[in-house]
Length: 289
Image 1 (tube, rainbow, N blue to C red):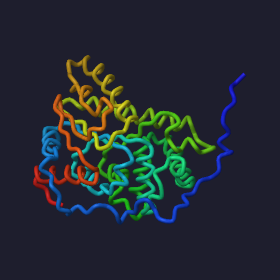
Image 2 (image 1 turned 90 degrees about the vertical axis):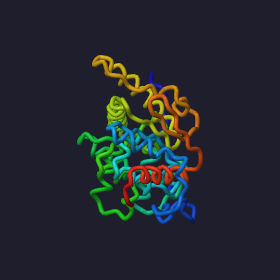
Image 3 (image 1 turned 45 degrees about the vertical axis):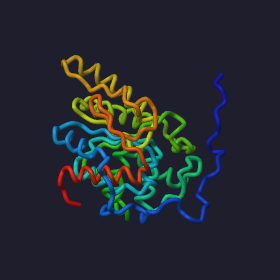
Image 4 (image 1 turned 180 degrees about the horizontal axis):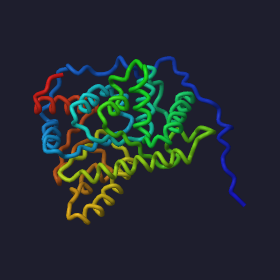
């Protein structure tokens, strides 16, 4: 006899009730702000890309509400990020900000039900097209007529051909709150994103891993992806850099960058460290805004 399951249809629809939004598009930090970038490892980022190495970035939803979307979008445009691995809330908030210009809440249990339903319908429809979680949402944003896609990581990553993969364990994606949740489609999309991550891990020979904000789900997926990549590489006498010993890959909260046994740490708030990383890269590469 099957065990009894919770009935999701009994959950009341949620709409944010707070009068003031948590974050607005107008709070994005300007690209031309003056910032001290001497301690930031942007030069290492540029060097790796100039040598053809992959650059895999890990982050959670704090990068959206820190107001640094346009700074990261510029790094995407310059080809300095080749993969971005995040959790589900990151892409949900990015989609909300791109389409409405505001973020009402970051509380998973209080996210707008209509927002979740819109994202769920996109993922379900695009599943047959072979798109991943981030790519499906990015495609809709980039090809649609939405007001704030210039600083949207999903839209700009899609524009520049950079995969944004979503990593989650069952129960942590807010979409699972929906009574008509398509578990089969979701499972296929999450698996597809994991395979995309494995492909990027396979290209990390002479590459770089950068953690912007701790994301346990993406870290766990990366560890598994690196194991599979090394097994595949061994058949061709290739090696994948050993990133496992780095502090942030052990789950600590060090915000930093790892290259073949070397750590580059830049502690501080995301509103400081990410603009500094972009400014440092810009200074090293010599490109204009």
